[in-house]
Structure formats: structure tokens, C-alpha cells
Image 1 (spheres, chains in turn yellow, purple):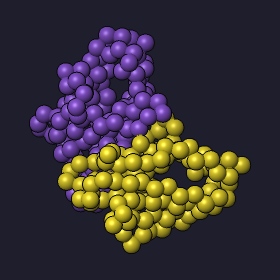
Image 2 (spheres, chains in turn green, purple):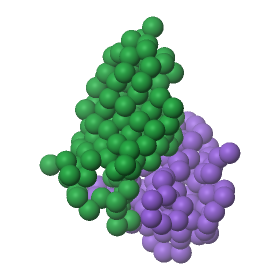
Image 3 (cartoon, rainbow over the protein chains, first blue to last red):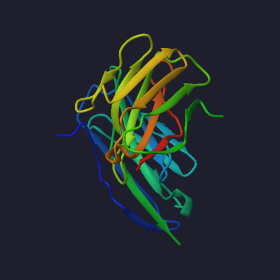
Length: 108
Length: 116
């Protein structure tokens, strides 16, 4: 089983839609969790950290479920500019693990 | 502002030549930097972990003699692609994780290498 698994997509949604991605992980000792956004031909940029209590930043909500070993990202009221690849990143014991990314396409 | 600076942003070179990519940590000292490679429509792949003052740790399948890493100071790591071939054409990205614990990664802006 892969350490981190993400549905590669693409997820095609219309503007204004709500969309959610999950990222499952196999190592229960993983310590820190993040969502990154990567635009085509650009470097990944931190979107938000993920906590068990859940955290929200505007239209974005991230959640960590340690019991089921997954993190989620919810995007409300999708904008065209949200089109990108969303990567989950886990850290633990000085090791970093990336998901393969989920591609989101928001159309007019 | 940028936390990590990477140069050059893009480079085109001929087969057989060597290319050096620099990664600078701007706001903090970094004993560890990470080098990744990303082929089109694929995920980031960790190539090596650069350790200041010691040898880099390479991931399985990455040739250490081909991808030379030097981390001579706490703010600079370089990756040299030696005797480049067209199959080395890729997007190379460095990153730094400031501090311990829950601090996230900061990425350089990446270097797009095209070998002709």
C-alpha cells in the first residue's frame, strides 16, 4: 500500500460548486499534515495546515481524521482560479511524503 | 516575500553539458534542503536530501554521481546535473523546512531544464 494516496482526478466542476478531496495515509505515526496547491509549471504553494479540530480559511476547510487515517479539503463556491493540482503532504520523523495530487478543473 | 530563492528559473542546454541549479534560503538558516524532480503530469519525486557540511542522502534510483549536491553553507545548496541528456529534462524544485515540528515546507520557484 502506498504511504499516501490521492485520487488523481481530474475533478471537473462548475463555478460555484462545492468540491471535496480526500487523502489517505498508511503510517499512523505521521505527525503533521498540509495541503499544497500547485499550478501548472509552478512550484507547490502552501494552502493550509490540517488539524484534527479542523480549520477553515475562507472558502477552504481542512480536516484530519486520525482514526480513519485521512485528511480532507473542502472548497466552497469554487472559482475559476481554484483550478490547480492539490497535493497532500505528511511529515513525521524527519520524513516528508507527498501525495500524487488531485487535479481540479473549474469551468464557467 | 519569498522564503526560498532558486536560480535559474529555466535553462536550455546541449547534451553532455552540466547544469548547476542554486537554492538559497533567504530568511533562515537551513541545515537541510530537499531536491525534487517533476516530470510532466507526474507528482513530485524526492531526489535527495541535502545536508549542510555532510554528504547528501539520495533516494533509491537517483545516481549520486550524476546529480551532484553541494550544501556548503547554511543558506545555499546546489544541484549539478552532470553530462545532461534529454531524459534529464524536467522541472527541478528545492525546498526547505524551517525549524522542527509542524512547520511546513517552503519551495523554491523551480527550474525548468530542457536538454537538447
